[in-house]
Length: 420
Image (cartoon, rainbow, N blue to C red; front, side):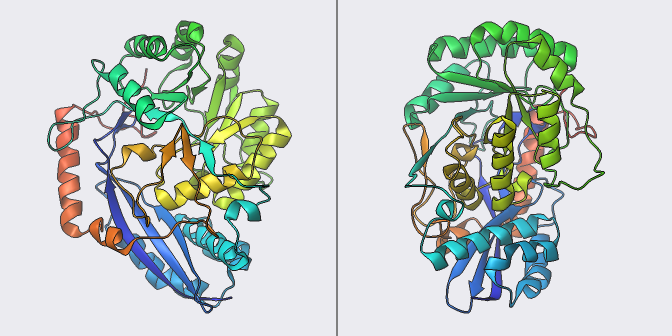
């Protein structure tokens, strides 16, 4: 089986309403590039990647890169040589999409789901998933806003709608003390048996983080994710000797000062995992497809975390359906992962998968059981959500309006717009 050619599609899937975080307000739609990799035996593999969701993005730049550079470079290669292909393409967003397509093709050729290729035993049909709560702005019609006035109702709606048994609250939007009160109100509303975690996106200073954890400690949090900004996100996996380490002393000091468990996001490099374990800087580490450099990278990440005795779970970033399915397959191959994974996925209005969005039932995201990734691209959806020049202008304009309406400050060098 050899690769013959590649097709790429640029799409924009709107959020139900723009979501807030310490980074400001989200772009109104998630911009992603999907690919189809064709082979000489008629099998087609799908992949996904994306660019930074900002108005400065050149709309068709990634499409041109796939069509003019990536496609010709992988023509004639075997999907089973995916590591060689990734080395040829370098550590890039585009190589991750191709790697996903190669795993999809290998699974289809073998007639089994990807998680079985990764060593998963038996049949895994669903992966535990957390309700990912965000404060929101208004959509174009003025609806779906989530504020300090109605957030408890929104959390309860998420639980009722999807059957979630774990709630994750995205913080870093309001004054930390106001947010501590918000967490307390959610805990009171959901009761003591529901798991509850928070994520301020690293916008707290160490003194603020220590104070916040002291306030939050009675609320029995599952963990607090990224309380401090300790390492740049999306660092490719590497075990190369001589790679500079990062400063985890703040996380380690915070962990020593509180009984609240700490989750480290961004420790995607294997040497970073070792450093987290050696310095006892976190209780939990989070990984995703984009950060860990593909399916094999995430599989290795979870394997090493388990060897080091670190609890691990799925992180959620910019992924849509294909990368979301890929995450589920990796998790399905790791029964030691018992912590519900994160998924921003319910915040999107739709997807470009055949059959629509992935389903969430009883707090678990259903894992497709077909060969390969078990997910295919819907041509009608690709056309419906194509990122045309007109749509790009409209989203840019709406994003500027949102930032003005909600007085979103300018981002600093660390991309944060709020720091406490």
